[in-house]
Amino acid sequence: MSTIQDYRQIVRNQDRFENMIRVRSDVKRNVEYFQENIGKITSAEELLKDEKLYRFVMEAFDLESQIFARALIRKILDEGVTDPNALANRMNDAKFKELATATAFPETGGATLKEPAIVQAIVDRYVDVKMEVSAEEKNPAVRLALYFQRKAGRITNWYQVLSDRALQKVVFTAMDIPEQSALGDLDRLVDRMKKRFDIADFQDPAKVQTFLDRFSAMYDLKNGAPAGASAGLPYIGPVSRGGRSPIIAIDSSITMSLLNFPRF
Image (tube, rainbow, N blue to C red; front, side):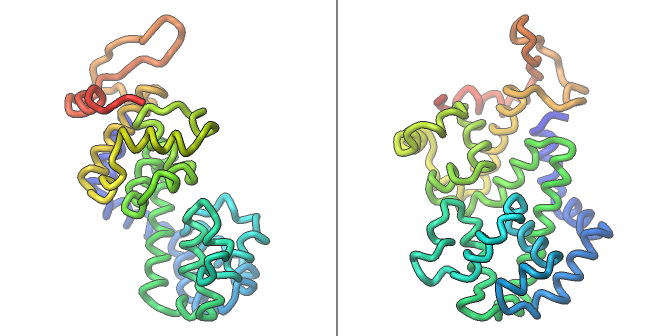
């Protein structure tokens, strides 16, 4: 199937897909260990010493790539978020502040991690991440779309997008922005993005879906549809003789969005 078909299938059946992840033996073991032990943690040092808990939390906050940056993570957790100059508040990526806010070691000594609602919220985030990783095995673009859908409601400015490589990838693809644009003047880039899309629309789930439909279509146009995507879809033919991937037909609603969406 195409990216848009894969993505829509998961969105339509998201509860079922999440339940499939929750009952996986590895996920069940990790969740049970987290629930049984996270309430015993009172400091950043204790969290970092427990490899299972540490990895669980880092994955839940989309920070798996930073697992080995222990000195950085400890400093972020030790400083918390109360001080405006705390490291978490100065990081471009908001995920670090989310992590420091949830753990709140300097503010509460880890008391927040004894709250059932917070523990459940971290578990739910962990399951979401695992579902997205599972989707990536079939189609990397679907993981990006699901991640963006999960984060969209908290996007309030374009700098947040530019500081998160996954969010940036989705937006650049949907808006047909060259990747190298991120290497130039960011203020100028943000001004140009503001003229082409109202960031407040990310607070509207329906408009987020429309945006992700466009991302999905553009991703396949730029990268070629995943293996098997052409099944049951009309073949149009190659763009050129230079070896570029063929374009697969897209349903009419998406075609119109591609035509009407302002190009960068």
